[in-house]
Length: 292
Image (cartoon, rainbow, N blue to C red; front, side, top):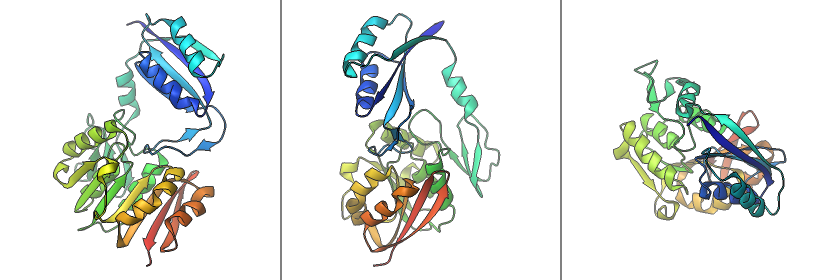
């Protein structure tokens, strides 16, 4: 294929998800979203993802796609939006481009993240093998990196961990390779669950990793550490449930929080915690230890 047809539209919430699903249904081989102005929005449990009040949604279509039909459908789905743009993109090896952009990198200390096609630079290090493009979470986003760095500072020996909003499973896998006894990973996205299982096997810790849907995570399951690398709105909604899953002397790691949201998130988890914060760019990690 010599070229692709890219069709883009800039819309406000809540039309973003509707347009994304419409492009999928119309045959887009890939759909991307990018910030197009407005404020940050906090209503998704997808790990390592940030939503905005206004986003540009772009779909990549085969050159023989019916451009007029697609544009008319998007016009109707967006509520009469007229700002739809179309452009021709020369064919490129998109998989190779992704590989070229993702190189092994050191998180902290002995912890490294490596794609499967690269030889780990430090073979004896704690190497997490993760491939991009399968689900959210290659360790490069500040919210994920905050959690990874914190895991290197915790004695995980004989401890159990819950990774809520697991994406690629990178945090649960890192915890196990850093010494945790067992880890459970969950996400609302079925693709994330299958990717996490595959990544667990590729990292040789599949027997220690349990992958469940959120509905399967119920009391009396209790964990020493609960990680929620999801955005603040969802953390607030989930606070009672995550509290019920945490051991009496447990620790919560809450990432995906902006500085202005920290107090509200801490309040949602109740007075039985002592929180400290670790910043990275505009994001912070909340580290909560139970005091009662």
